[in-house]
Length: 115
Length: 109
Image (cartoon, rainbow over all chains, first blue to last red; front, side, top):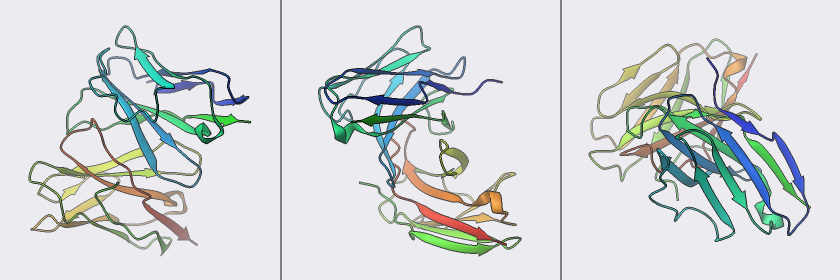
């Protein structure tokens, strides 16, 4: 079946512009996660959704970052007034439920470059 | 910060077993040990997880010490396609898994 998809696969934007990154989770997966991976580094957790709700937004790097999820399906990560330090691969994952015994399925990521 | 410690890199000959260690000395009783891997330019891929008992699936085996302060991921017959960064993660739930920098495994012919 279809896996997690993300769009666009690559995004180049000028400093100060806003960007929207999209994630389509596996159908029926109630939990959705966003991570950021800077070049040569590990994954940095950003936010998770249980259904359409994000109970904890403390992982978002600044108030320029926001995320939403609708219909317990697609999620959008928005970065306002992008800065060069926002350049990274943004990864989305989903799992059937938010529980310890359920693996996360990752998408291929969106590579964001801020010039 | 990651709650696990892994060697930054390891080499393994093709066909041999790859044994990847992980220290998680501060693990709590309810925390699982998860292993994921990331092949170059792809999203991470789940491998295996466990709580107390050793686990085995079609990809790997997970050996957890009795005190649960460390574990070893075993790839029984490494292939070139197993070259990747391997992440060892602990957590009670999947809501805030913290991926460290992992171990870069290089399988050579």
